Length: 434
Image 1 (cartoon, one colour):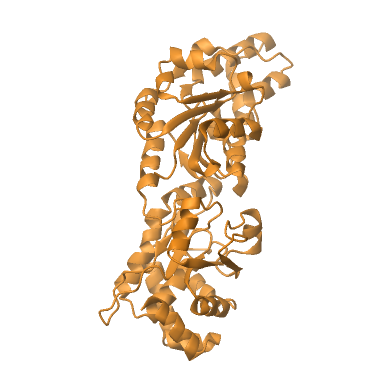
Image 2 (tube, one colour):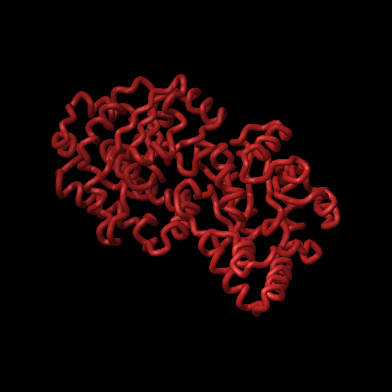
């Protein structure tokens, strides 16, 4: 199991607060002498600006914020079934900003029986987004941050602080918190769900995905692919991946056990600075950052993708990347951000060097489409004007790239001649895989 604990927020996560907010808006309207519709409209506008709409509209109208109508709270229709199902696989915790008596309210909803730990702000004297409330929960659960998910509707209270601690995060877009506009990579959760059933489906996919590392989405071995001479590529020699910011002890032990101790990171400096690799200063690993500037930006159109891949192949640092791979004593893991474009181009060139069947090269490339489903969903949220067809892998992207590659260089050997890689280095590189 990739995680041991699921920590939930309460309001707008397990409990539907719609009617409680409506009651609060109605009281604000009565106090200010305006219509309820006016209050709701203004509040929505504030929420869309990542502000607390109920408090902001009360301040705008110069009235006191009304009390919270907890009697108007209800469970979401799927809360009980989802908690019952998840409690059979995970330990369930609650980290919530709540008044005194949180356990009593959860008991009244008849869901406390599925919950192993409750950490609430009133009882603890500290509230989200203060990291101390998360530290308290993790300490009482007896786990490390990477062993848990934080699940909540608030980017500011739930996602950002948990992510900074190294927890995995799930943003459930329910209630007013679901209107948040993500403005930076720091706010991007690990996953996004629009309902509790979708949350359960994502967790099921996450637990059963084929990524070799439990803390990444898209780490795969280049072994087992059929070459035209009938041989197959070796396992545990070259591994492609997305970024690895918080490798778990299990991931570290796995890589060391396979003698994969050289890490090549192709991300640009600004991305490395904002999301440092967990292997950069880790004992037992040698970390290199060879930034491939080409391919770090989204191509301007669908038609431009194969050409952008050619620019990646022509990057001045490709010589360093392939030379380092060839001369490393053990296995190598190489990555970009999503393990898709720059990693995809390097992988295609490696597999072409080993004369792997074209259909297998294409199939390997297309696996990224399945492994990165959640990333593509987050891209749609983070960049609403982006044409997703540009970033979601298509067979034609890699096939057309390989056609352009052969047209430009004649062969992989011609390409290596062009970028200044000797016969000795290319033979060492080839021998990594076959």
